[in-house]
Amino acid sequence: MMSNPPPSVAGKYGVKHLGLSLEKHKRYKRLADRTAKLNLVDRFDIPAREGRSFQVSTGSVLRITCHEGPQVGDMIVFNSQKLEERFWSARTRVIHGGHLSEGDRLWSTPPSTRPMMTIIADTLSKRENPKGTKPHDLLFCRCDSRHYEINFGDANLPNCQSNLAAAIAPHGLNEVDVHDPLNLFMSTGINDEGRPYYIPSVSQKGDYVELFTEINCLVAISACPGGSSGVASHGLRISVFKET
Ligand SMILES: [Zn+2]
Image (cartoon, rainbow, N blue to C red; front, side):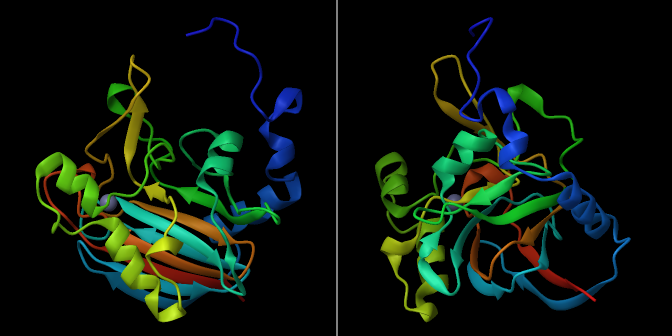
């Protein structure tokens, strides 16, 4: 570790000028605290080891809950009105770091390069994180069948790449449109060799994150069938709220 590292890409002004204004911060806190009145407009469950896609309109609050137990959710996002604009994991990592929490934003690909969503609530934000990890990972990619074939000799295991490709197929998208996700509830770090590692998710039954949608989004989430969730696979509950 360098004792006096240079500033990040956000420069001497810090990440704040790329993030939330005080006004927006206050609005999002009202939404997260439910001081603002919210109506539930959609709710469904993604079964364990499966994926689903769904639309969320601008100005909604999307809540993703571990309603059964610890579970990692690989989430990809498209501009639902211009599907070639999608979540840019790498740009988001450069701006906010390798793990996201409250106040961080999900940035889109060029030429727009703008916030698609903002995290407004995160029940893991004050949780103790063992072994130098942090939750809500941007270091890893999604799991895929070739990864399982190369490492475990089995190309037929359920995986996030296939789950996400199947989930977005009804929208005219296919496997090449799957992009690197935000790995919700995934606990990761970087070891002394500079390589990423993960531990079983620290999430517990009832934990959730909430995201405010800055644009109209097509979202796909895979309840990751891999080992990062822990010994068991669980589903994820999707709830969408709209301010009245
Ligand atoms: Zn996965």
